[in-house]
Length: 176
Image 1 (cartoon, rainbow, N blue to C red):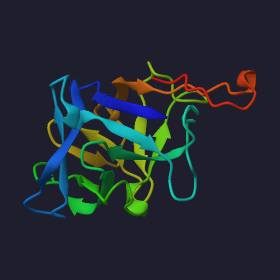
Image 2: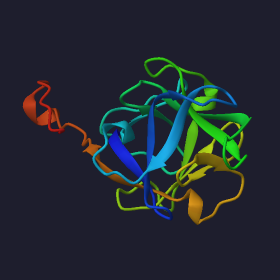
Image 3: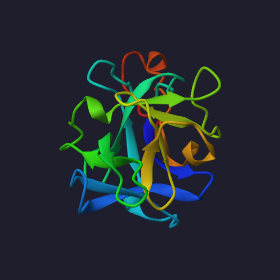
Image 4: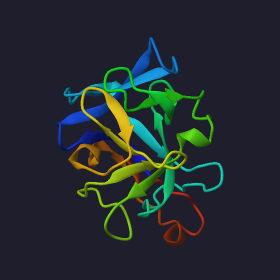
């Protein structure tokens, strides 16, 4: 698990959000794509779901369901059957308070091996609606896989598990 920026490899934009609400649809916090590299509003924390916890340093498995929490606002990447404002695809928003939202915040990681590799392009399938996170400037969800739905981990903090056995029970942090 870690803290990271996600890049849509087709459009070269990072998954981004800030505390601005959609003027239509759900009225929830907007999620967009931006080209800026050094923008703190493009960082997301990978978290477990209510039913499946993620432990720090444990690799994300292909097929695992996760939540992506926007670091600066504490809201989760979210989707539902509202139409997105520009393309009328499925709206993607940020929802919840301090990382707590609902089942519509859950995304399944689709990748090729057994775990999500840092250099690997992946897809995120919305668990409740079966749509894939897609986008360019407008981030939305679509039912069919395409080049628009491939994302790659970019800047961030990637945790490694701590080896505490060598220190006789003392917890030594080896993460960034």
